[in-house]
Amino acid sequence: MTTTFIFTIVSLTLLGFALALILYFVAQKFKVEEDPRIDDVEALLPGANCGGCGFAGCRAFAEGCVKASNLDSLFCPVGGNDTMKSVASYLGLAVAEKAPQVAVIRCNGNCDNRPKTNHYDGYSSCAVMASLYAGDTACSFGCLGQGDCVTVCNFDAIKMDVKTGLPEVDQDKCTACGACVSACPKSIIELRNKGPKNRRIFVSCVNKDKGGVAKKACSVACIGCKKCQKVCPFDAITVENNLAYIDFNKCKLCRKCVTECPTQAIWEVNFPVRVPQKNQVEN
Picture 1: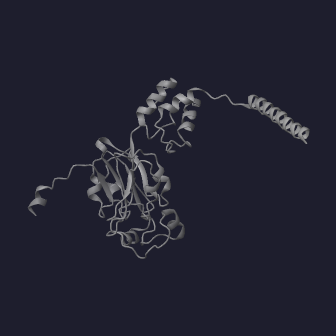
Picture 2: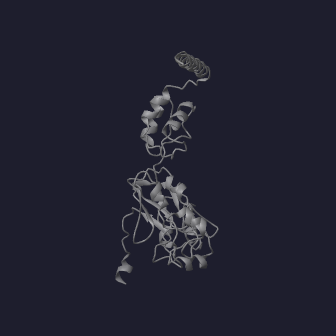
Picture 3: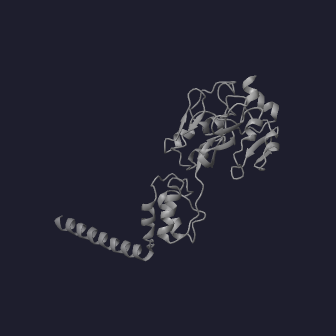
């Protein structure tokens, strides 16, 4: 009995040792040498692992930078230009500076502008709500108000306004990682250049219905009248599918389109308050 027990222990020990040797040699034969620079580049990154760069995380982005011949198509939105300059300097590459961006909400359909036609009583999720039906208002394009964008934001840059039922972006906290853009099933969130002095102009509407239908569903909807397009001196505005869009790369922030819009669908952000003209004051 004792001899059998000892023999069993010795056999299992030798078998384990043999398998360990086999695994060691297999690992050595098929191991992949990793560039040590990946660790150094990863250390230069903010470590947010937000995916805004298009990679699974900061380490995957660092590996992409090390393997790339240039950094033209690579950018860390959280670290911004300073981080990319550090990465480029370490790798001995050049990098072009990119304009900082911020998320904007292209919907102004608050409770007053876009009345509810029914009550949603399901799971609190925009994705779930969008999969069930068009929404609880007559506008099937606007914000659903369930806050999926808030949930996915790792930087506390978005909150839901209780009064309007719409999300609000804190431009000082927003890193333009794009998580909220991907999370929105209605595609009402867009990344746009912050602009000089953080000033920007955009159409706060994504409704593609014809003018009368859109206006009936929301009082501040874009009606595709093309007045903004006609008044723009920089060819920055296009109107397709009954919806105006402002190209922020062409827009010179003249604000002519803002005053021309009959439904106030075009927003101007961080501009000084307009001074009323003399005849307007007298009236």
